[in-house]
Length: 261
Image 1 (cartoon, rainbow, N blue to C red):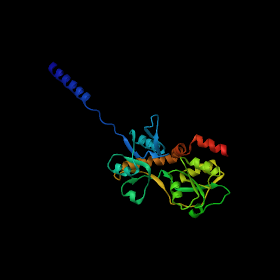
Image 2: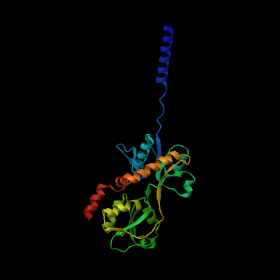
Image 3: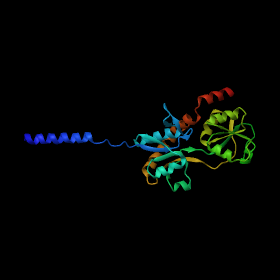
Image 4: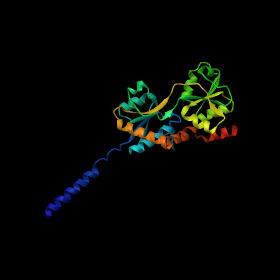
């Protein structure tokens, strides 16, 4: 009996020793690909400028929380995003992707999370642009890199294009009579008009531009989780709050705008 107990104790000790010597299991992250040169969606920040912050990064954290996995953002060039997804280097992409028919051949896409369709904003009471032709002889204020910037650049002959880091700076330019028209993302215009009733929209129509989250075509479970998160955030106002926090809140610009009124 004593011999059996001794053998048992030795075996237990060996099991403990082996367990202690075994390498720890690698941490499973939710790997999110983005491009960190896409202000204000994704850019370098934090204390040592090594973190990726911005609208997309904040949304990625909420999705990661829903999956129960820690988040790891991966900075990639735009043309590296889809290859990295399909090679399994990232689990999803938050990088200003539009779910075109061509891209749907390479990935599955969530419901849209951001509407970047260009919208013309003017001072109420002025001439209302109705077509793209009406914009050709105008001074345009845009957010650099936005869909409005792309549209303005495609016009042949605008008098001037004033590019700014934030949409509110474009509004400052418009309200200070330094531009005739601001061309901004549709997702932002509602909040801007609610705050500044002296502004209104023009009648120029542009093709819709919606950003969606991309996942691998066979990862339907993750796609379902992403869509659940987006639906919940739209219902409870968190998506609007993210837009306000990362795209419209700029204390310096806000102070300048208030002073100009």
